[in-house]
Image (tube, rainbow, N blue to C red; front, top):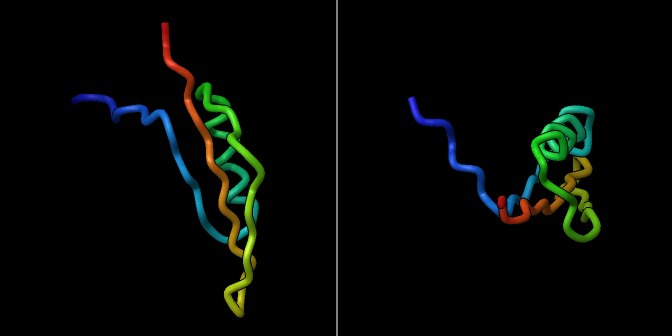
Length: 59
């Protein structure tokens, strides 16, 4: 079985909750770094967050 391709750019979105933070933290643990500031919006029910992450070229 092939491992999933590690994309150089990821944009995570979702409700601003512990699960979202865990997803961002997991990518940071894999070598990604935050790219820019997070964005948030309100959809009438929940706060929705977005965070870009980048993976620098591997040597």
